[in-house]
Amino acid sequence: MIMISACLLGRNCKYSGGNNKNSRIIDLLRDYPVLPVCPEELGGLPTPRLPAEITNGDGSDVISGVARVISSRGDDFTRHFSRGAEKVKEMAKKHQVSLAILKERSPSCGVSQIYDGTFSGQTVPGCGVTTAGLRKAGVKVISEGDPLLEEIVSAVKER
Ligand code: SF4
Image (cartoon, rainbow, N blue to C red; front, side, top):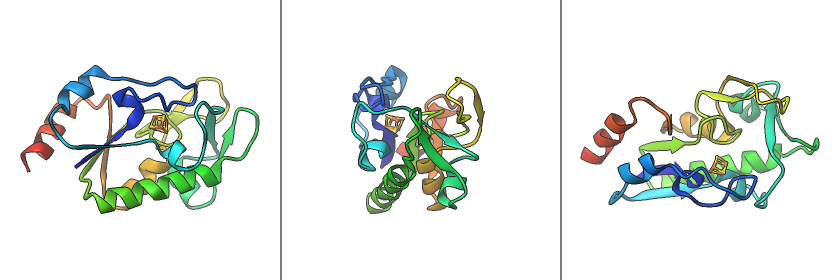
């Protein structure tokens, strides 16, 4: 089973109420069982919602309690993001997910880059909270822009 950020499949779960529909991914995963997830909705946040960014670290630091997820208005969303990451991790275990394809730069789903916490559009190296949780559970996580996406997905399909 491949897990995927639901917004990449065109679901309107993005903070703005829109999506990140990605035709390359949709074509690649056609006829293969996928498990779409939106960790922020699973964590109890509504859609649309305020944008949020991680301050003082990345998703791993949120899990270890040294960084927070803060909205553009200053609300602390850490609890929601952590709960969403935990639920996604449980779903991955239950459905024996071997690969997750998640949306780069999101504070939940980011794989190798996230926004820097200043809401200025600047990115820094690091991953989102859900990605950190999945990696800790041993799930391979790649982004929708991974240059080896096709090869990695083919290898999973052939197993
Ligand atoms: S939390 Fe992940 S799945 Fe949900 S909208 Fe953000 S990037 Fe997409």
